[in-house]
Image 1 (cartoon, rainbow, N blue to C red):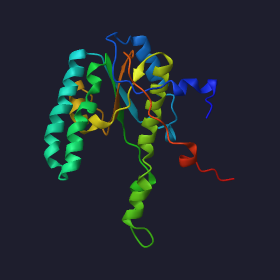
Image 2 (cartoon, helix red, strand yellow):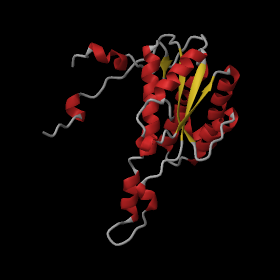
Image 3 (cartoon, rainbow, N blue to C red):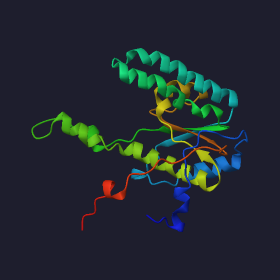
Length: 214
């Protein structure tokens, strides 16, 4: 399908895992976070918080922390194939270690009506849980992070959406000194000028993922 020039900023985004050592200046950080917080947010909750880490030693320590937590969790996976897959994944979960900056994205509380419902005649606990599955609070944060990625690409910076390190989210929050009631790490992204590599895997055809109802 032909790509419109007006939408070029979208197609410019790539998952970048190699970066130059060039620091990310305050001006760029502020522009990207401002772009992020202009994302839509249900009930205007803005239940997000961003922590930008530019201390290279701390970034390296965060990667080491992920590796250590990975080793702790590995024995708790019973299925051998899944355990082997998880074992291999740690290299991908720590690619942020070579970036000059890392943006940690935290998601805060977002109450939904299902939180106040109790099972009874005509409504099961399973149905209540299904009402929570859309997770609008996380959708708010994801929209903000997408804005950040698109803005970064438009300014010549590389990013990579990462949720793998979330299993060490609590420890990372402690390391960087972030404490905010009810907030958990939802994702992180390395940030810097791309040093080659990076790409966007082929997308499924529209015929496979699009349904139009007239």
